[in-house]
Length: 208
Image (cartoon, rainbow, N blue to C red):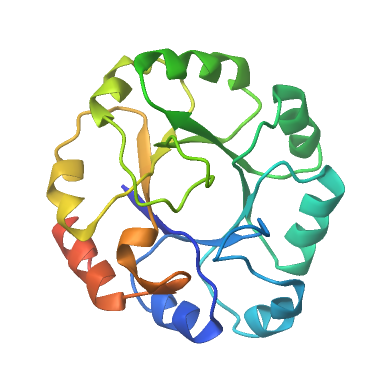
C-alpha cells in the first residue's frame, strides 16, 4: 500500500520526509487552508531536488491555474477537492495531467457519484465530510467503502492517526491503493512530526 503525506509546507520538513519510505507528498494550493503553499515558495521547494513525487491539492481552481502550478512546482499529480465536474477532469487529462478526485463521505449513498468520474480520473480519494476541504482531523465510517464497486483505485483519507496503521493494514478493500496522512501527524498546521510518521510506517511494515 502506498503512503501519501499531505499538507507539507516548509522545505526543511519536506527534506526530512523525503528520507522516509513515503510514496507521495502533497502541497496545498487552496488559499483558505493553513497549509497553503505560496507562489514564492516554488523556488525554494524546487531547489530541494526531491525524488518523492509531488501532488498539488486544489479546490475549484481554473485549469489555467492548475496547469501553471503543475509547471511551476513540478507536480506529478493534481488532487481536486472541490466541485470539479467529470468534463473538468477530462479537460485536465487531455493536458497529460494525472488526477486524484476527492469525494467527501458520510454514507454509502455518497459513493454513487463516483460512477460519473470513472475513466476521467486516475484515482479517487475518500475523505470525511467537512467544510474545510480536508485537513480537519475527522474520520468517516470506513465500513461503507466495502460497497465501492468501481474500477478506479482510491486513497483513504480523513483523520488517519498513527494508531490506525494496524486497522488499515487489516482492511479488505481490493481497490485501496494508498493512505493519505495529514493533520494527525502534525506539530502545527503544515509541519509534520517525523517520529509519528515513522511509527505509522513501521506498523505498515514499510522498510525504514
